[in-house]
Amino acid sequence: MNINLAQNKNLKLFKLISEVAEKNNQTVFIVGGYVRDLLMKRKAPTDIDFVTEGNGIDLAKAVSKEINPTLKVSVFKNYGTAMFKFDGLDLEFVGARKESYAEDSRKPSVETGTLEDDQKRRDFTINALAISLNKENFGDLIDPFDGILDIKKRILRTPLEPSQTYSDDPLRMMRAIRFASTLNFKIEENSLKAIKKEVERIKIVSMERIMVEFNKIMLSEKPSVGLKLMEQTGILHLVIPELTALKGIEEVEGQTHKDNFWHTLEVVDNISENTDNLWLRWAALLHDIGKAPTKKFVEGLGWTFHGHEFLGSKMVKNLFYRLKLPLGTDMKYVQKLVKLSSRPIALIDDGTSDSALRRLLFDAGEDLEDLFILNKADITTKNSSKQAKFKKNFEYVALKIKEVEEKDQVRNFQPPISGEEIMELFNLKPGREIGILKEKVKEAILEGEIANDKEEARNFVIKEGQNIGLILA
Ligand code: ATP
Ligand code: MG
Image (spheres, rainbow, N blue to C red):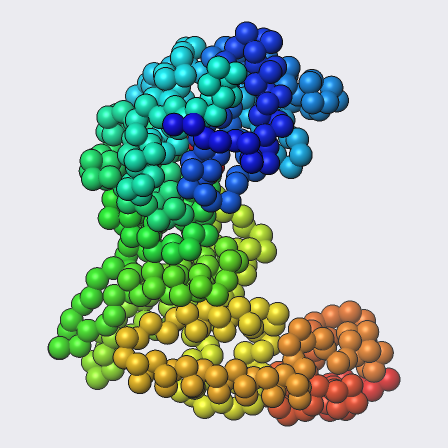
């Protein structure tokens, strides 16, 4: 089969690479994700992999020189690869190779090989397709493992024996699940069995690499596809046991609770319809993790998960640390959303007093809209009248919050009286009284005792200051 590259927007580049390779007496092929996505008519990737029978580093250097002698080529000698950026593309060149693996490492020992050797070492048949850029058969598809058929059947299959493939490099298990989730493919049955069998090998993969794949699952259209596969194969239990701990339904005195694991997957899918923000999706994934350790059956009350949001937000930090995820603002954002995840709904039950609304506004600040997106996604009941009721209640809270926000402006709260002003009022040096008075002002505003207003705050501070024995200057 010949792939007509005449209309390809990189045709000029491919021709140039073809000519340079010929001059250098080496073959060259496009391989991997670019070919796969081209055949699937997906958005063309900006990274393109080329394989050559010969030296990949030499070819990269020769091609870049031909394009522009000032281009900077990054060389990875140990891997026999080199890459450079050109025209918004990441172009990577590798010499065709044959690999063999040692038991304790996912780094193979490598010999030079033919194109076919190189295709064999690739993870899936759909990633092992190559397009020739050589003059005699420019555009020919080289597909020794029926990758094209697997694209049609939408299945992920390994070119070689699956157990060996996954055991050699267990990252491939995560890649299989990632592709299943992003491409909406099935993992072929023998592969799935092999992953289950080799699952413990995931332990030799660095957490950073696992999380790169995991985050691609989280960003796929329906992350539950990948999450279910992770659960089913046992990987999830090894990587994020806090999530699998949410599985199951218990019954005491005829009372049950919902299965919080399956609920969580639904929430993640729901939220993914409304946001591409990775960390908001993570907040959905973790919003109930405090429920496993707080679960309790209380006589007369039924199942309770008292304080699960608070505990959950504490667990986020340990989890991010262990998963080697960033510990800065992204982590704090996830913590905050987990902690606040039940607050808007609780407002409905406890009554929407202005002070409760102001407190929520104050605590959520600029993340209030995201919190609402999470709350909407959290409605997973199948009972349509219940669903309508929740949605209506929720819209009511959102509306009330808007009213309070316009009136009191406590979102991104700025104290109406500063520490310096308080010091001046009582002729004070810096000290703990100032913090105490500022906290009282904030509380009084949130409780609605005074308005968020300079004059009222000043009078309030004078009164409160005198109450604790301070003397006006
Ligand atoms: P994408 O770039 O969309 O994530 P991709 O298939 O291009 O998908 P890359 O990580 O860019 O994935 O890898 C390029 C190619 O290298 C793959 O298509 C595959 O042929 C091969 N490859 C990558 N990682 C592995 C691996 N762990 N084992 C075997 N082959 C791999
Ligand atoms: Mg790629």
